[in-house]
Amino acid sequence: MKKNPENPPLLAIEGGKPTIETPVPQPERWGNPERELLTEMPEQKSLFYWNGPHCWNASARTTR
Image (cartoon, rainbow, N blue to C red):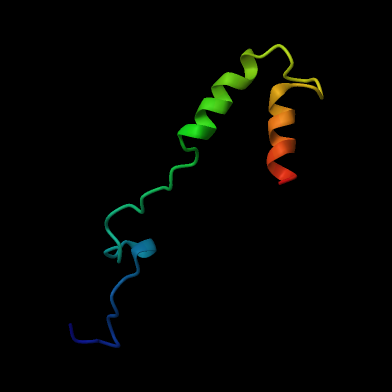
């Protein structure tokens, strides 16, 4: 494509052709282990207590 200083090509925002035409794929936010914990957590009776199983599991993982 020849460059024409009198009539430059339009940017996409100005109505020209976009450089990237395919949408950028979004990364997966949650994997299966996180999804399982997210669905299991509200069902437990000790969700808001310090002695809940998730607190002990998280504490054990961080102190290794």
